[in-house]
Image (tube, rainbow, N blue to C red; front, side, top):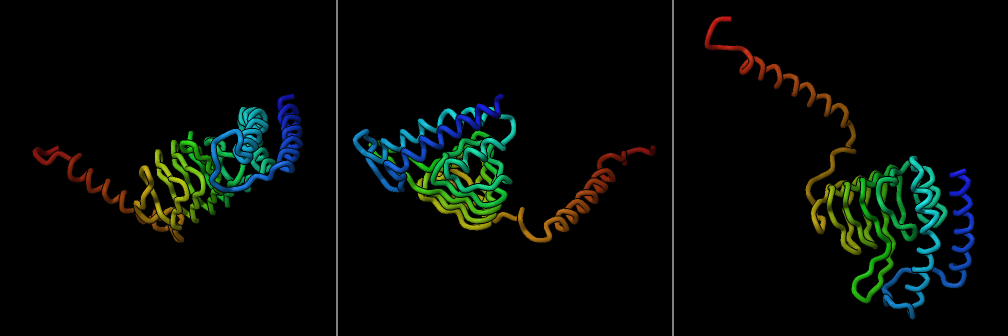
Length: 214
């Protein structure tokens, strides 16, 4: 019954969505935050249409229905992506493969600053990781294998280079991302061996009494 209600609401929302988009096609740009501005007005209408089916789908404990919503309303994504824990806009966003969005993160394609209303497409390439409680504003481009640390901020139009870890508000380069390097398993295996040697040395130095015969 619940699944049927979700798909029924998605069906009618999609019909309304098509009609509204025929009347006024969504577009990127900087507009006035005023009811007299067509782009702002129809963006508000689109959000109203999507609100109920998206809310209903997100109550499902698995991310499958969320991904259906995203695809239905125009977000380019893969079913392998993990977007369920974050809050993601439903238009002008493109995800590559193996993208993970952390808990309570916000990904926007639209922003309101004073009397200005800004819509810009955001792009996330393959193997991107977004830390928990991060905020990503519209128009960003995150290249492959980049990581945004938890509680960080990306400002409008910010671009992250491939293979780097970023953190801060606004986010800045921190260090190279080694988590997707080739032969990483062998590197970690060597580190595990070193850790075992350190533990053994620690036990020899600190766990065996030297001041008296045992």
